[in-house]
Length: 93
Image 1: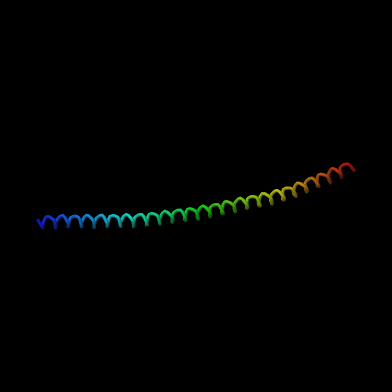
Image 2: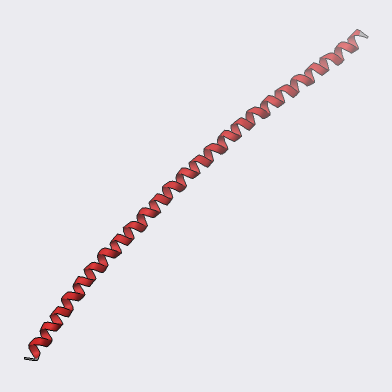
C-alpha cells in the first residue's frame, strides 16, 4: 500500500515539475517574444523616420532646384525680350 501511495506521490511531483518547467518555458518565450516585438517596432519606427527625413530632404532639394531653374529661365527670357526690343527699336529707326 505504501508503494502505491509513494508511486502516486512521485507521479504527482513529476507532473508538478513538468508543469513548472512548461510554465517557465512559456514565460521565457513570452519575454523573448515581447522583447523582439518591441525591438522590431523600434527599428521600424527609426527606419520610417529616416525614410521620411530623406523624402523631406529630396522634396526640399527639388523645390530649391526648381526655384533656381525658374529664376535662371526668367533671366534668360528677360535677356531675350531685351534683345528683341533692341532689334525692333533699331529696325524702326
